[in-house]
Image 1: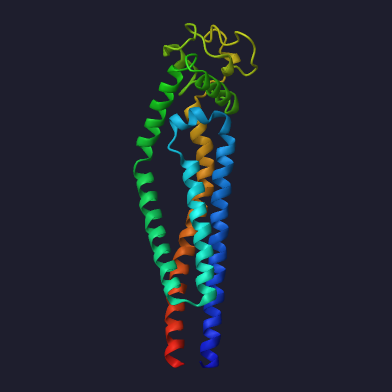
Image 2: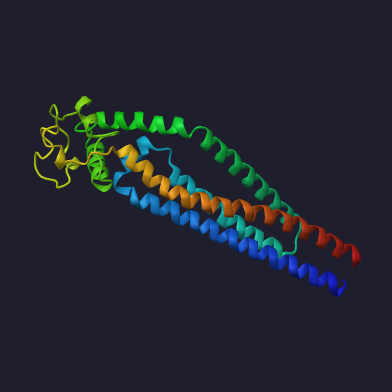
Length: 243
């Protein structure tokens, strides 16, 4: 193989390794982000399972897929195996297509998902005082997010759960004390006024800004990775032809 061709091969491999490394870092970032969200919501998991679509778990799984895909790609490049590199490229194309489809679907149905979240949360509130795991989860969530009810504290007035009329759970109080949630309208200054659905959406939205940035970087990296992989396969074929 000519020296200039060998230099070209080395440069392409180095570029692809850099792309794989960035891809790997992105995967690790998604795993850490998904894990941090799950840890944040671990104490209120019973409520979250009933009101969310399992997004933290999806993030973690996607991150793990990317992590292992990078290992596969690195092995393919080291071995200079055209079949493995083509397989790596094909998998990246599938992952990229899946990301686009999921992203477009999530954007299209974001309003519906938000409405469903509100409806599911109201159903959860109806189980308060009836099911102990739900009761504990709601209390922890209201204290964690400093919120009360689904849209606001008056949601509790319409619940069929074990709450006295015109009263809210003590976990709605800024300072939790026994019976501090009774006569909520007269003593509303004691309570958190914002609903938990809004607070959760705001918190998730902050994390989705990070996810969006990671997603843009991930998509750009995948396109470069596919281009470099195709270029590497072409260069390897030229190498074997010239031998």
